[in-house]
Image (cartoon, rainbow, N blue to C red):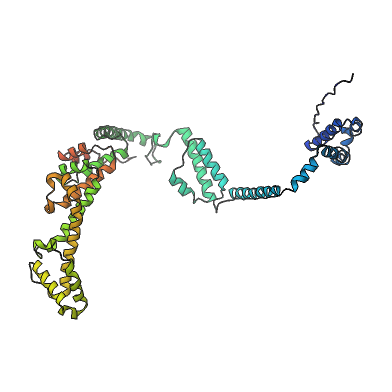
Length: 426
């Protein structure tokens, strides 16, 4: 009985290259599958690896064994048939175009950007490494670094490495014992003499931080006992002291409204109307501010431009109508008459805009609304102050802030901040 053929495992010698091993194994496998064991003996690895291993393989193995194997499996026929398909050519062109685009992208990624001596690939690598460690570059730093040259980047990188080393060895900068002293020439004895003054300063800072925390909690703000937080509280006190005396109730009403800005703009419009009207209060009768004077402008303007139009009926009638609105003699010059008409028209236009907001202001201001006699500049100033207070923090308790303004202690609280401090380092 014939024994079943066992598969042999081919192994590569240590001094044999992968290419030689591949060709040798291919020849032996094809020959073994065809049952031609005499060829295996004739093409032993020792014979094939003579003076020219690759040449021997091509000479003996490929023409006889590989070609026969290709013919037997029909691969040559399949490749020739596929080469004739137009779809194959189109696919090849698409792959070629995609390869060219990828090559261009790769070239751009490895090309230096200007005189920065850095490629996009390097820049992306730095950002990816930073993101992996949870670091987010500051936008201002990124904007500045975009203009660094290669030398500047290398120098800044060296300084950063040095800072990292110092931080690792002596701790963070702002927690160092003599942070902010700025006098590196002081001797140890000099430092010892500064200890009492530094301790006194630390005590005052701690007291100020506690006071700032108390005020922040009272105002409904998040406690921030830092120097920046203290400055914010001082700014709030200074802002509230700008309120005119006795306007705290108006400020409270404006603070409770959904749109303090609308109130400020409407009040500013009323103040502008009153300011425009003030120089002409003794020039026109009160009824003139609401009289229909738009029809008077055209004939008077025509009389300004053409002297012969002044003799016309329209010009003379417009002059008589204007004279009835004046509490003074009618000017003789046409340009002066036109200026009076324009003043009336401008005043009426401002009053019409103000009338559109009158109902809103009356319902909000209560007793402070007195129609055309309302002190609009006061309302505008108060509304702007309320806007400034709201800009500090949306959680600011305006009622409590205005309460401090009402009892007159805002300036006192603002003065609690230290007006002068000992100079650092003596």
